[in-house]
Length: 482
Image (cartoon, rainbow, N blue to C red; front, side):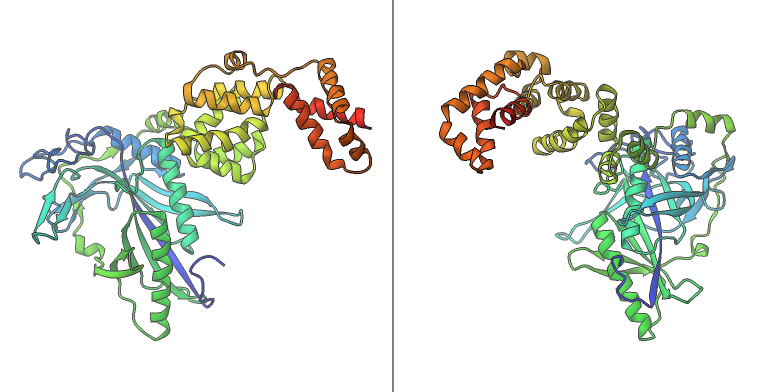
């Protein structure tokens, strides 16, 4: 049973709102840099600082990214959408309202497919994706008991992706977040770095009896920045709410923070309703009109997305579900694999990638893009192994040489003298001599100690300084000893 389900008479309903920080060069309504900086209030101007009388100008790339994200999550793209003002009063929001989209978002009615641990798939419906700006950041000092405001993040373009309450447990929540994050990374609309806050999830969770038709009162778990913490928080909150309902305690609609150290959720504030935000149309921003031609142009440059790539890898290359899951989880790894299959399509090449290349990348603490063992070189190495030019030991030497110093596989084979002895006559002469020199072992083998066969193969390999083909030696020895 999925994590968190220890109360068989109750179920939970989870909806998730994800804020995706977009990879634009400038902010959403001004020309300030959208890059990270550690210097407070460095990337700000009168527009993103909320000075009176300034006018916003919409960044076109934000709209393009929103359309791309909508297409990637199977949404309908609205031909006309508009911006609204969402009012609330925090020190890090200098205008005292956030520009967002309320009644007319740019994307609606989509879905993301997730794969569960048992191999089944489930559709998580997307209610909407809307464009909005980020607020600044409050910094609190425990030493001086003072608070500071850094407005660098103010005006950073965001997409908010809102699901229907289709998620049933912590495992599904984690699968959904991973799937959505992967889609956004493939589209290159965001880095989706959870630690840096460019992919932030607010989880809305409620519980009800299995036979209840209406959803329970929801609580929001705010801005949890890791998959593990989200999983832990959902399991805890489910347990807390069911226990409260069982004793007749009323669940209060509120926003709660997750204390990852003590593994508990704590009340933060009462949850605002829509009326509390006093939404109104933003008079400074015009309608966003999206033509069919604009949508088609973006469709034409869309990459193959993880879900489709996963199924293609299984069908086209015979990968297992496990192997395909690993390949599509990282955009750069999938790109490496696609190029490798173009250079040399074989199961052995897949094994070398998953075992040796990924092992080396992890050990060297580098990205697969920086690995000196390119897809072309790995394909050449595997070909040399498969056609018998080198054996496994030689292939390992070539691999390590390329990894550490670069070079071409064929040239390394020549320079290090790693070619196998390919002549059957030469190898048979070696085998005959080995048997003649080890008559005592031959007699023991023929009397039933067949485990000595490995000794004969190893001795033959040693006699050829590892250059003999072990498979050919095995065939010859079987015949000579038979």
